[in-house]
Image 1 (tube, rainbow, N blue to C red):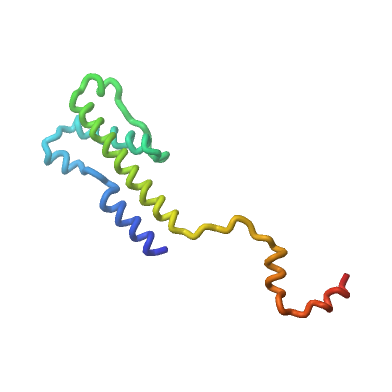
Image 2: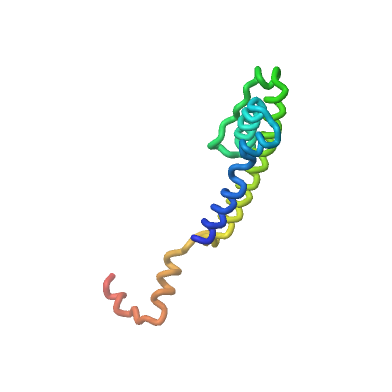
Length: 126
């Protein structure tokens, strides 16, 4: 169990944050692109199935600001990618647990437990 938790933690540390603001700034993007990127990333994760994220898109800025729009589209792709990775990891972890048996017949369990035990005295209890 601890091993699985550590693997999950490692995946989130290495991919959970995705592209950082400093990476975007170092790449020459302005604050409007970065804001669009953040909004798009949250939206992409929500579109990818993460119910804890929100779809965020400033429609006016998206239509009027090319930097915001470009950032939003790039962020949306990254959000979808991050969510797909997280989903794959969680499916791998949950899939590694043993499957439960469909049903248990309690009469069969009792008979198995009493195998080899003399139960003839129990008949007089009726």
